[in-house]
Image 1: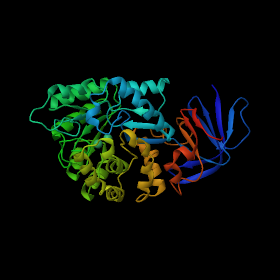
Image 2: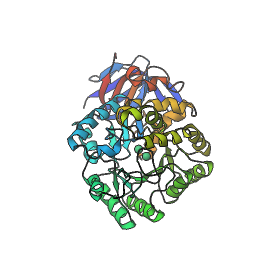
Image 3: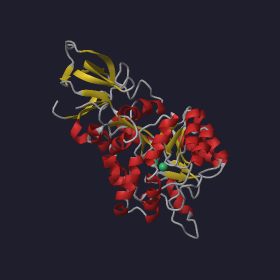
Image 4: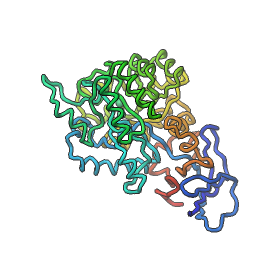
Length: 414
Ligand code: ZN
Ligand code: ZN
């Protein structure tokens, strides 16, 4: 097995909040086998002198939709599967090139995509998929237009169309079966819509999604397979309800208050805010086919974004990195670093995209760290991210090298 050595690196220790200079990072078989003071090379190793640049763990985005190829998610349900797949491939590749070596898909991506990437059939980040998100009728996953008649056949399209990010399922027995089906098809975790949302047409933001009986059944089925539930939720009421039913990660959470944040902290629930997407929906949505109802809903949660971050931070909730971008807005994925810098320290923001994200994925020590034994996902860049996140916000220019599981996927001037 070939050995790769990144020589003369400043290694970023996110948890310790420090850069450690003069280090070699040794990689073999996709893993980091040593991080030590620079020393003479092993005879047949490929040695790359990074000249004192920063070496940090590959980034993790905990909330993406790699199959969101259109802003109007409702319309892509009827897109031919081949079109959705072919448009998904460049989205995956560009995410990796922005430094995200691992992403958690919050609805839409199926296990085959994760496996195809692992096999080398497609280029992209390591994927943790949710299969299709679960939504009640009239919930955030129900993209049918308001009408005087519900077209049942439309709802069924979500069972086989890969452009669908969610499926509609109601009732305790039915949701149990749906969770079992998603897990049978290879979902790593289960995603539910526990409140109204922005991109969907007929559900008010403050609507609750699912009864507590349904949420408890969903959580029980996920836990029985040793995984967990992530819930889309905006209001304090929806957040508290979901967390008390056993949901482990709260997605978005823009309208959180101190009480709801306290419940999250007490129960060890994680927050995954996705602030950049509301900017994108408001600024780019109208031109990209987002409905006027959705644009107006995006406005209503955008204003509370930074405040929610402050409330979560003050309550001691662990905050992971999320972006939740759709279609052409995907290129703004790294803007979230700068938005968060308005409230969090660079170290806190970095932890969200590395160590805390690894905890959410139950991959502590494997992902999100440059340490012996970890999977070799590495970025080489100029500057000190603990002082400024500007470089990470411009990955095309700043990332000099990207290594995913020991394989160099980008190399620029090194
Ligand atoms: Zn959502
Ligand atoms: Zn989402």
